[in-house]
Length: 191
Length: 191
DNA sequence: TTGTTAGTGTGTCATTTGACACATTTGTTG
DNA sequence: CAACAAATGTGTCAAATGACACACTAACAA
Image (cartoon, rainbow over all chains, first blue to last red; front, top):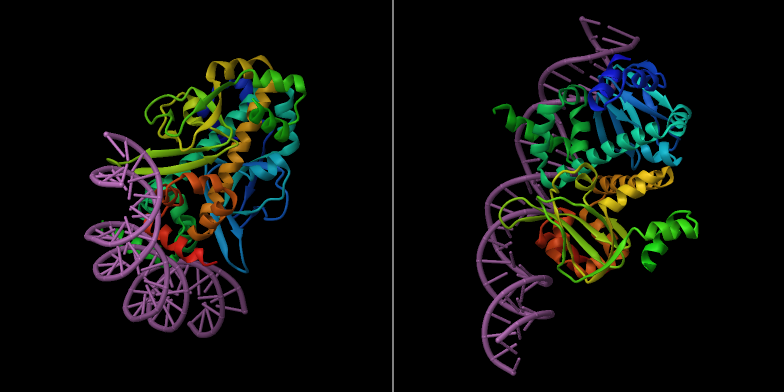
C-alpha cells in the first residue's frame, strides 16, 4: 500500500489515522501486461489506482480499428467515471500495457466511504475535481499545441508511456497516423 | 428567474422550497453583446448561468491571436472552474456574443450555500460532475470526429452559435483555419 | 535453429490544409 | 446616401498529411 499512501500523503492533508482508514478500503492486486481492467459495453464498478505502470484506454469504432482515448501513467487514478458514477455501460476498454500493481476501490466500499462522513464525501469531490482539471488541461493542450510538441512533451514527461506503448498507439493517442509520428521521431533524433 | 428555475427543475429533483432557496442565491443581470464576463489574468469569483445566448471563451497566445477554447450556448453554466474553485488567475477570457440574461452566483453566496448543508454540497458536486461528463464528451468528440462532422453537428444542434459566432471564431473553435471551414461550408450548401 | 508474426522504418503519391492575396458582400457610422 | 470597416468568399501554391506498398528488425514459438 506504499504507493497509494504516498500519493495521498503528498497530495492531500490527512492524519495518519485517516490515511490508514482510507487505504483500508482499497485492495492490492498485481496484474500482468495485457490484463483487462474493464471492457467497452460492460459496467465499471471500481476505481483503480495505478502504482507504477501504464494503462491504455481505447475505443473500438469499426472492425479492428482502435482509437486511443488516453494513456495513464501511474501514479494516478484510472476508471470510467461515466460508468462508475452514473451506472452507464462503459464506452471504452482499459488494458494494462505493463506489469503493475493496482489498488482497487470497489464501488460498495466507495459508497460506504462517501456516505458515512461528510469529510470523505468532500474528499471524493476533490479527487473528481482534480480529474476535471486534468481533463481541462488536456483539452487546452490539444487545442494549443502541435502534435510534434505534444510528442516531445510525452518524451520528456512520460518515459513509461514512450517505452511501453507502440508507435501506433501513441500516434492514435496524439490523433495522427503511424507514419506521421515516425517522421516526427526521425526528425527529432538529431536534436 | 424562469430560465434558471426551469433548468434546475428539469435536470434535478428539487422541491419548490429548495428551488426557491437555491434560486435566491442568484442575481439576474442583463448584458449586451460584447460584455466581458471575465478576463485572462484576473480572478473569476462567480458562476454564470446563461439563459439564452452564446458566450465565447478564448485565450490570447501571441499579439492579436485569439484561440477559441469553447462556445457556450445557453441554457448552461459558464465560468472558469480553475479560478473559481481553486483561486487561481483565469487563463482565458469570456465575452458575450449575444445580448442575454445571466444569472450570477457570487462566490460568497456559493460558499454559504455549500457550507450550510450537505444537500447543497452534494448538489454542487453533481453540477461539477455534469460539467466533467460534458468535457469528457468533448474530448471524445475531438478525437473521433472530423472537423466537417463537428461543423455539421454544430449546424444541427447549436443554431445560436452558428448565427452569432463569426466563421473565424467557429474555425478556431474547431481547430482549423477560416479558409478550410469556408471550403466545408461551400461543399455542404449543396447537400 | 527456423519460421512466423508483430512492430517499425522508408519511399511514393494523391489529397488536404494553411497561408497569402485579393474580390465581394455586409454592416455601421457620420 | 456615402464611406469606411469588418466579415466573408475565392484562387493559387507550397507544405503537411494519410494511405499504400514493401523492406527490415525484434520477439517469440515450434
